[in-house]
Image (cartoon, rainbow, N blue to C red; front, side, top):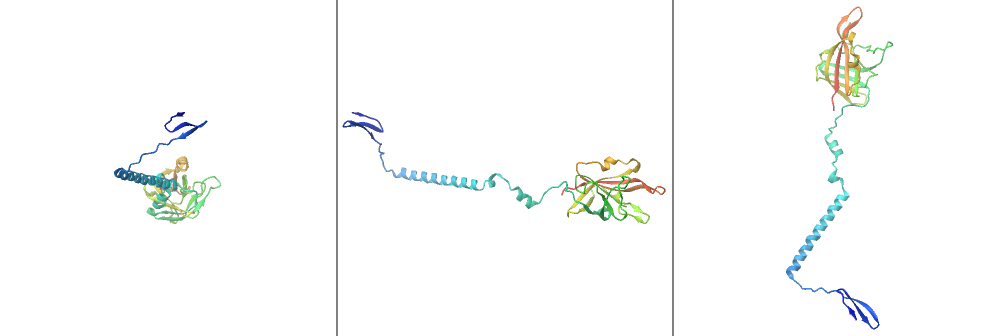
Amino acid sequence: MRKQNRLFSLERSGKRDQIVIRLPMPSWHYDPVAFREGVSYLSALTLLSVGLVSLVLSLSSNPTTVSTPQYSLIAKDTEQVVVDSLPRSLPTHLTIADIGVSTNLIELGKNDDGTMQTPDDFAIAGWYKHSPTPGEIGPSIIVGHVDNYLGPAVFFRLKELQQGQLIRIARDDGRTATFSVDKVETLDQNNFPTEAVYGNIDHAGIRLITCGGTYDVLSGRYSHNIVVYGSLVPS
């Protein structure tokens, strides 16, 4: 008894049934043209596979070269870093080339009556220590005398400053804070706009202050103050 199947058959041998697997044997016929075309196809497929494997290995070993710019190298090479404020550091020297000012800076506090101190030396300006240091966010306050009985003092020409001229302040950390003049005002001391001059601002600014107007011999005071407003130049 025999049951036929394409790949195997069930045959009886004696009293036992056994499965006989019959694999179809391919019929080979050598065709030179087909053989060459097959070899060319296999060669091209092999080269393509090798190329794809090489690409995958390259991407997996160095993924940043494809999708991530090297920002740190760009910043290092060009050194174009914009800074619109500086950390706290005490001022040491003030230079205003346009009006011939070059002076060391001292620290100033408050008098017993709560008013701001002024320098004892008429040739030196002072930074008010309860204000931001030059370059920090807020108005940094620097004051100096306009003159005395001997003649002009450190800020005698302060009123001559013009918009856009530069004020440079050397700091204890070795950096220089450079400010551009925004405006110059002459303000009545009896109606002094305290908030506008000393109040908080949202950027790094500077206020240079001295006396101006008319000098009153009896009171020993000037009638006005000269105030220069400046803003930090980004560097």
